[in-house]
Amino acid sequence: MDYYYILLLVIAAFLSIKGEKKTNRKKLFIWIYIVLIGVALMYNFGESIGQMIYKITST
Image 1 (cartoon, rainbow, N blue to C red):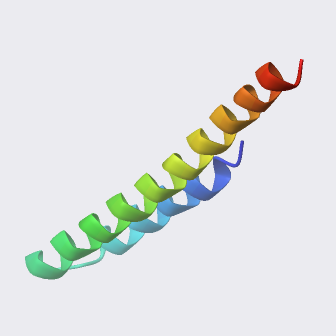
Image 2 (image 1 turned 180 degrees about the vertical axis):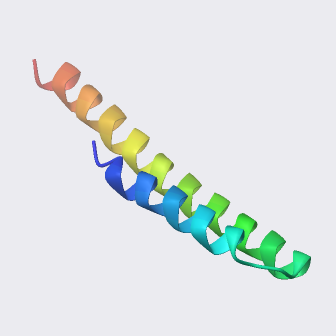
């Protein structure tokens, strides 16, 4: 699994939110990173579920 990308997104989110002073931009950054992390997690879970289904059906 490529959870390194998710870890990098979390670190980038923390660093960009930490330095931001305006609350509107901070909320925007939070939502952007939540969506990006969610998409990455769905891709990883979908890939692993697809591999399991392939192994089950190919035997």
